[in-house]
Image 1 (cartoon, helix red, strand yellow):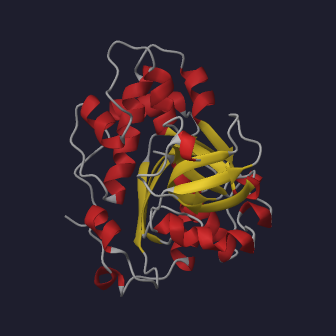
Image 2: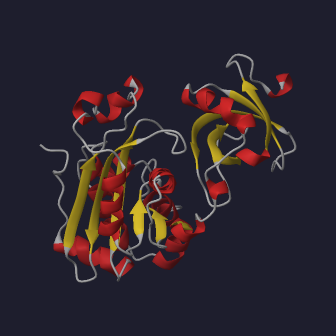
Image 3: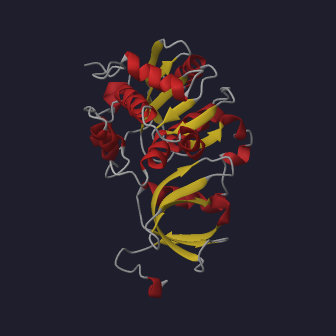
Length: 299
């Protein structure tokens, strides 16, 4: 099966359900990338499926040559190597074609801050314009809908939600993941639950909020943080403006990403066990932390 094709299909009923949630249409997006940091890693595959306001379905797909070595640690998930991509275009032309395809439809993705982070950063780097549209997160939407429900999935991963919606997913094939996202949203849309509140909770940002260079740039003082994050090192942050008393925060880094309020380190806080966004401009200092050493009394 080609990576531009999917084993999944949307039924007429699913399209109708989606249009109840998004009467003007919707575009689901998924990417494969060289890593988990939109500020430093590269896109290697873009896929999108669009539902128009009258129910027409269209799709977009492109493989992309990242011009950097793809780490083995990510190849094991998506299966794309530099040999697969050596004849693929570089990012600028597919990126323009993608935004032309999206038009002004709202976008939804699973954990959309990451996918859109890559698209926004690449658009900024190559001066590609994008429309001022709204972005929603199907993971947040599912959490809002299923919270406190008896028939709740065990977690909100795309694969788990697909199983909960009773279809099989060929995960980490971008076009397959876009259709899975839409099928999950169609299933959610059938539920007799307050969808307006769920939509509000799943709203991530409006793309017009990314209109300043400081959404993407961070101090040279933090340049060494990039490699530590790429190497998935446990870190000790001295953080200003913490919501807890301790200014020193032990974290497990996930990625560096742009947000309208400024670039952030997205990481698991080892105090709370929750994933949080740490504004880079509020990080006073950072250093590696040995796994055996991290205890509150040692910080």
